[in-house]
Each structure stands twice: as structure tokens, then as C-alpha cells.
Image 1: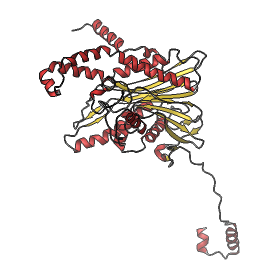
Image 2 (image 1 turned 60 degrees about the vertical axis):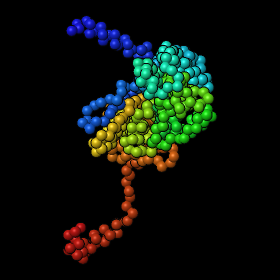
Image 3 (image 1 turned 90 degrees about the horizontal axis):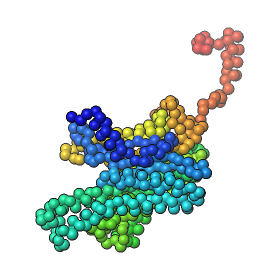
Image 4 (image 1 turned 45 degrees about the horizontal axis):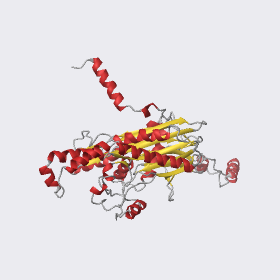
Length: 455
């Protein structure tokens, strides 16, 4: 049995293994993160994960030379493991927070720095896989050409198993959505289908949600055209259809060597004239963070997909922003806001999918990992559940009683205008003559007794 000292040593070793230099950077106190792990729904209700948690996030701020404050936020949704996501967190922070932005004030310069940071992380990550790629190639050469996969496994099972294990490691990749704030300007860069939503408030107090990221999958016509120009004729996916490209769904990601250096091994990608799955980010900005900006949400696809599955909503961005607005009213911390939104989506998804599992014997239902990062601008959490300030002045009404007035325009507004205060309504009929005649009749003794008793 290990001694207490040995247990403490193991704890220290595990902490060092899981500790990175980014953990020591100052955390932005204007932000908070909520998350939930994936779950396989079982009829007996027991907790079961399909795989270890594969997501991570980052929210830090620092002052550059000249006193300009720079903030960096990110949500990283890994697949086939979390290694690529962790690598991206540390790599992007190193590429953007160690003085590279000093003296850069023009939008184009900052966007170029963001793009270069993504490409540098991609290059460094794939180079870290060189030994695995070489080992995989060597093993592949040991299997004769021209034999089927079944024959290969029958004749060379040990080699095939090794290649399969290596494929699992080489498939590790991640989607990224990153928000960079330099001074008062916001820049958002992303690859894959993790999203960024900016909530703004107009002069009438109506919240409007703007998606400031791009979904890189086969629902994106621009991405389908890009693949077509490479020689791939991909039909578009519908809103609720998740089409795969090789071993993943996204047209862009960081990492995942198999759909990049080894993409020709996938039948649907083999015709491409060059690597079809890329790591080049799409960048929005700079967006001036003025008084209209309420808060920013960064989220993994698991959050909005789960809400879509649970409610069949066709306006998931608006629904998530509405949830966040309600939680700003109720929660005392930004982490509380983020976690409360995640928990609500979990409950909705569990209620919907568990009922399916129970009613249909043998059916397998599953919920993905999900992460939500909230960064507030001109919206406050409060210490009491009775009110909070929007833009420091306007009080949001109790949504439990009044609800939200949804703007019917395509802008996706959520109205939070308070009703007008009560005012005195003056009478529109003058009864003064009536009461004068009653008084006169009573004095003269001509008022009927029954009417006199009523008055």
C-alpha cells in the first residue's frame, strides 16, 4: 500500500502533467465558462460517457506595451481526443500574447497576426506527429499492395492493429473559435463549427444577436464551392443532416493528419487536387465595442446542436442568447451565467432523448460535450434576483412574468423594453350636474326613498 508521501508525489506528478504555462496567465474576470461532458442515455438512468471530455477553453487578459489591454478567449472542440485542443490553446496563446501585437493598431495587421497564429499552430502540431507518421508509413510498407482490408487483417493482424492505433492518434484534431480584443476592437477567428455570438442592444432596448463566426461544414455554400474547385462535387447537407468528410464533419480544423496529409486514403476525398480540409481561419473584425455591445458568447457545436435536437428550434442562436439574458438576471457570477445556460440545455436534451430511449427499447441516444464561454461588455450580473442593468441604466423586466417580445424581423431582435409606468386616467364623463340635481332633490324632499338609500 502506498505511503502518504508517495500519494502526494503522485498527485504532484499528475498536476505537473496536466499543468500548462497558460494556466499561470491572468484570467479575465469579465468572463466565465460553463461545460458539460457527453453522455450516453441508458434506460436505467446510470451515468455513462461515450468518451473522455474532449473540449477546453481559454480566457485571459494582459497589457501590451503602451498600456493597451489585450484579451484572448477561445473554445476548442476536440475530436478523437483532447491533445490537439490542448496544443491549440497553448500555441495560440504563445503566438498572440507574447508581444506579437505590440504596435499593431490597424485591423488588417491584427487580422494577419491572427491568421499567422492559426497557421503556425497547425504547422507545429503536424510536425509533432512526424514520428507517428513515419512509423505508420513503415508499417504500411509491410503489407503487400493489392490485397483487401479483410485479407490484410487475416494475414497481418498485428500490423493492422498497430496501424489502427496510430490512425486514432493521427486523427486527433480540433475546431477553434477565438475572440481577440485589442483596446476597444473585437476580432473573431474560427475553423470548424464552434460559434461566436455577439449580442447588441439598439436604442429601443432590443437585443439583437449576430453570429460573428462561420460554420465550416457542408451546410456552407462557400465551403462546398471551395471543395468543388478542388475537384470534389459535394452535395449540400440539410439543416439537421451531419455529413462526413473522411473521418470528420468539418471542412476546416486544426490537426487531424488523416484528412490532410493522408486525405487520398478516403474515397470521397481522393479526387481533390490538394488538401481539402484546411486550417486557415475566417476572421471577422475589427468590431468597435461601443455602448451597444452587451455580451459575447463562444460555444462548441455540442451546445447549439443539443438545443436543436431537444426543441427542434430553427432559431437556435436567438434561443441561446435569450437563455443567457435570463441568467444574467438570476446569477451572481459570469461562470454562473454560463453554467446555468449549459445546465438548461442539458436538462432539455435529457428530457427529450431519455423519453425516446424509454419508449423505444434498444435505442441508443447520445449527448455531445458542450462548452460555453461568456464575455460581458455592457451587461451586468447582480447580487439579487430582482433586477439587473442593461447598459448600466435600463432595468430588464421579470421574464418569468412578462416573457420576451420577439422581434419578427430577420435581425433576430429580443425586445426587453419595459412597459410604460402607470399614469392617472382622467374621467371622460362629467357627473357633476348629476350630483347637483341629487343634492337639490334631497333638499326639496322630492328624491325617491329607494334611490336615496342607494346614494
